[in-house]
Length: 79
Image 1 (spheres, rainbow, N blue to C red):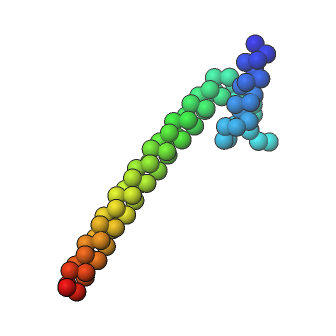
Image 2: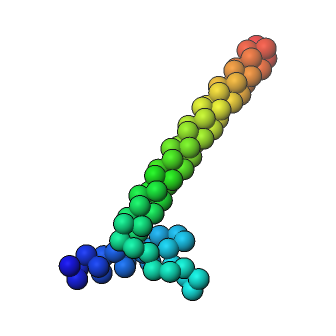
Image 3: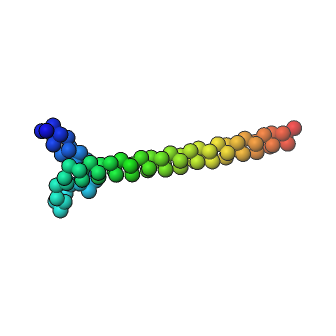
């Protein structure tokens, strides 16, 4: 039981809003629920950022293709 309490205390230290002078020590269940919700929020943030990165990569790819096409047109017109 001591190990579980120590692990929960460690978890409380890294969860936002779970520590501070004005915050009462969270119960075990409150700590676990807060940790679960925090993990879910982080997962959603990662998914959103991954989507943004994918969209930016796609835009960059299209821009590079357009640039290559322009360069090809210029090269073709020179001959």
